[in-house]
Amino acid sequence: MKNYLFLFLVSLSALTFGQNVPKNDLVQFSGVVVTNDSLRPIPFVSILVKNTSRGTVSDYYGFFSFVAKMKDSIEFTAIGYKKGIFVVPDSIKDSRCSLIQILLADTILLKEALIYPWPTKEQFKEAFLALRVPDDDLERAKHNLKREKMNYLAENMAMDGSMNFKNQMLTQQSRIYYAGQVPTGNWLNPIAWAKFIEAWQNGEFKRKAYNPSEDK
Image (cartoon, rainbow, N blue to C red):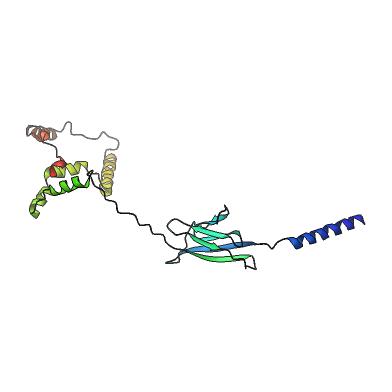
């Protein structure tokens, strides 16, 4: 009898307490984040309840879903887009809220940056006015095709992708060709020695190196 009386009192207190419990304001907040121009999904958008640490991140297809409260202010932030804010309404009856959030592209205009190889604009103007450019097309072509200048560019300019590939293929071909034997050299080649002595006597190794500063 005492057990039944105890259970009755517990049930009565629970019923009384349940009447004082406030309405459940939790909702399942789901949706997708898209762009404003093409409605493409925006992946990995940061979605947080304002002034809290609650939230989530949208997946690769822009979809998200987490538990929020009514009247929560939800912030949507992504790199390259303006921040979006949505307030969860308090008139939801089925504890679910779906949303298609549109974010506007954020265009950042940077100030013009002028880069000069001279410390001041005055020095740049002075060097520009003192520049001597040939008026004749033939003279400019001869100036640009100087042997010293072409040799300097050939020795100091880095090879592009096709030249590197060709060099690698020639090296590999030579390695395969001389596999199992000592590679030949020009140390005992009389023709190569004759050309070397002739170039030495002609003073080809004493020629002045090309100086790019002379083209000013």
